[in-house]
Image (cartoon, rainbow over all chains, first blue to last red; front, side):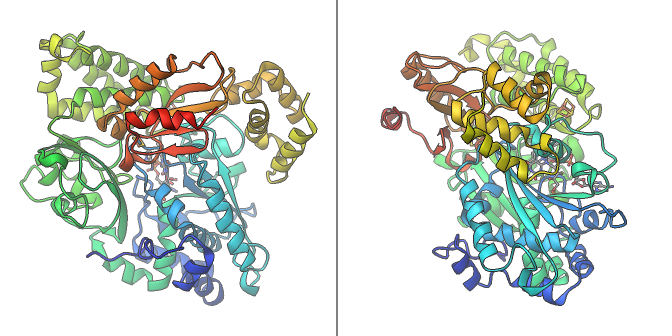
Length: 434
Length: 154
Ligand SMILES: NC(=O)C1=CN([C@@H]2O[C@H](COP(=O)(O)OP(=O)(O)OC[C@H]3O[C@@H](n4cnc5c(N)ncnc54)[C@H](O)[C@@H]3O)[C@@H](O)[C@H]2O)C=CC1
Ligand SMILES: Cc1cc2nc3c(=O)[nH]c(=O)nc-3n(C[C@H](O)[C@H](O)[C@H](O)COP(=O)(O)O)c2cc1C
Ligand code: SF4
Ligand code: FES
C-alpha cells in the first residue's frame, strides 16, 4: 500500500463536514503556518518538497511562488484552477466533492504564503452540485475562525470566493481564466509576462491546480524534506490519477509517484486489469492532450525498461515513443477500441473549444476534424493520412497557448503508432461505414 | 426591463468585484436564471445596466457555452461526448435520446420540455457514459433507465 496524503481520510464517514475533518487533524497546517511560520518559511517548505504543478505542466510550485512579484504594492491574488475539463480527468472534482476542506485548508495556507488577501476558486460551470459543497465548507471554516478577519487571532485576514465558469474548456488555461474572472471572453494572453508578474487586474497572481493547493497542508504538516522522500527523482510526493475506460476498477487513485505502471494497471489495489478479460490496446496516460501509446510502449519504454508513473518515465522517448503524465487522466482502451474514431472525438472537441485567436489552431483543428471524420466514415483517401500529419505539424509551436499543441499531439502520435488502422479504414470503407 | 429581483442579484455580484464590468458574466447568468435564455432585449438591458455596449457584451455572451442566446426548453440535457464516454458506449445513449425526444442536438422539443446538447467531459469518466439534466448528474446511464429518468422532468 502506498502512502496516502490527500485521500487518507476519504473513507471516514462525514469527512465532508468541518467537524469530522477537524477531528481527523484537519486545519493543523493553518495553525502551524500562521502561528509559527513566516510566509517565506511556508514557501521554503513547498520549495523543498519538490511539488510540481498537478494541473498538467508540472512546473515546480515553490519556484512559481517565488516568482510572485513581492515588490509591487498592488494586491496579490491566488486563483485555484478548478476548471478541470480535460477529457479523462476527474480527480479535482472528486477531491472537491468528497473532501472539500482539504482544498479550503490548502487555500488558506497558500494564500498566507503568497500574501494574498482575496483568493478565488474558479470552478467550471458544469460542476453545479459542487458549488454548494464548497460554499458550505467555506462558511464552516469561517465560523471556526479560519477565514475572514484576523484568522486565529493573528493579523492575517483572507476572503475566499468560489466563482463558477460559464462553459468554456479554454478557461482552464490560466491566462484565459484570468480574462474570464475579469468578465471577458476567455482568450489566452501571450506569456510572458506570466501571471506571477501581471495577472488578475494586472496584479501579481499565482494560478494553481486544485490538487497542487491541496498538497500544501500535508507538506507543511510533515515538512518539505519528508515529502520529497516520497516518489522518485524529480517526481516527488503522491499524485491523484483519474482512471477510466476499459478497466475493471475505474476511479480516482492516490499513488506514490514511481509506482510501476504495470502494477497500477493490473493490480487489484488500483485499476484491476483490463475488463472482460480482454487485451490491452492503448493508453492515454495524462489526459486527452498527451500522446497516446500502444500497450507495449506504455508498459516498457523503447529500450525495453519497465515504465513507472512519473513525469520523467512516461515522457521517456520524447514524442517518438513516449507520452506525458500531464494531469493524470489515465484512459485505457482494450483491443476492440477504434483509434480512428477516438481520435475524431478528440479533434471535434478541440475544434469546438479553440478560442479562435490563432489561425493555425482555429483552422487546423477544423481540418483535422473534417479529415478524420472522412476517414472514420469510410470516405478517406490515402493522402489524408499525410495531410493530417502535415496539419498537426503546422499547428505545433505556432500558437499563443498550448491548446493547439494539445490538439496536434494526439493526432501525430496516433498516426505514428497506429498507421495501419488508418490505412485499413481507407482501404476497406465498407467495413467501417456507420 | 430588469426586474427588481434581477437588479438585486446583479448588485450582489458587483459587490465582490473591483470593477463593475467584471460582473457582466454573472449578470448574464442572473438574467438567464430568471428568463431561461438571454434575448436581444435582455442583453441590451444588461449592457445598459453594466455600462457596456450591447456589442461588447454580446461578444462575451456568445463565447460561453452555458449562456444561451437562443430560446431553450424548461430542462437542459447535456450529454458527455468526450473520450471515456465514447469508449463506454456513448453513441447508443445519444441515439436513444435523439429517438425518444425526436430532436437533434441543439434542438428543443415542440412542447418546450427539453433542449438536447452535447457537452465536453463532465468529469465523471469513471462512471461513463454520463449526462446531466439541469443540476442533476447521471452516471453509468443505461438505455433502459432513460424513460424513468426523463419522467422526472415535466
Ligand atoms: N487539468 C486539466 O484539465 C488540463 C490540463 N492541461 C495541461 O496544461 C498544460 C499546459 O499548461 P500551461 O499553463 O500552458 O503551461 P506552462 O508550462 O506555460 O505553465 C505552467 C505553470 O508554470 C508557470 N510558469 C512557467 N514558467 C514561468 C516563469 N518563468 N515565471 C513564472 N511562472 C512560470 C505558469 O504561469 C503556469 O502556472 C499541459 O501540459 C496540459 O497537460 C491542459 C488541458 C486541461
Ligand atoms: C487548454 C488548456 C486547458 C487547461 N485546463 C486546466 C485545468 O482545467 N485545470 C488546471 O489546473 N490547469 C489547466 N491548464 C493548465 C494551466 O494553464 C496552468 O498551468 C495550471 O493551472 C497551473 O497550476 P499548477 O502549476 O498547480 O499545475 C490548462 C492549460 C491549457 C493550455
Ligand atoms: S492556440 Fe487555440 S485556443 Fe489557444 S489561444 Fe490560439 S486559438 Fe486560442
Ligand atoms: S469523458 Fe464523459 S465524463 Fe469524462
